Length: 195
Image (tube, rainbow, N blue to C red; front, top):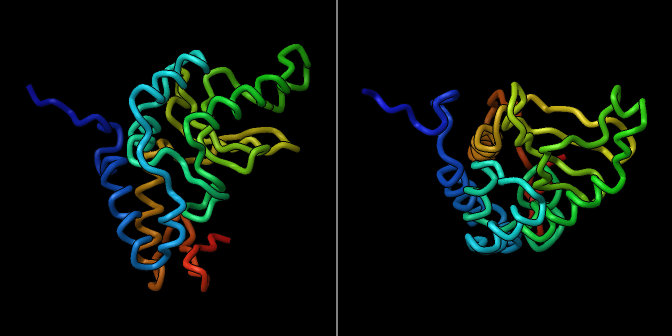
């Protein structure tokens, strides 16, 4: 019997760890200050504590990403998503959104503010990017929840797929190459500008 890889739905996507290896190598050469802002890996114990505090397991891709880098120390200079959250900020951001989400408001049915099973992984503190961890057709997909509008999915089927495209955009930032992720520009201080 042939055993399919873990990401068999999208077998062309490399592992999260492989994409991080490529991202780290590119940052080391082109944006060392952004690389320096990435934190060392989270421990398995810290990840387990986070899962306990938010009451659900972290998506596999997010767990693998946290084992590469436990977020970053300053506002999002490494990737085009704002600051990557360390495990403790995942808990804070999740609780912040749940506290402000009134499930009994009728308009919340039409314009979602936050959803059960959404796990925040990056953002600016008030408008997080999230991964849907609940079962169903949106399982694993990335979304964005702006503080002043309804949340929605971004079209990325997984964190692994998005990180792969970020690595591609970095490695080809000086070429004419069609990407779903726009290439960054380097600043003079060793950080990146994604916008």
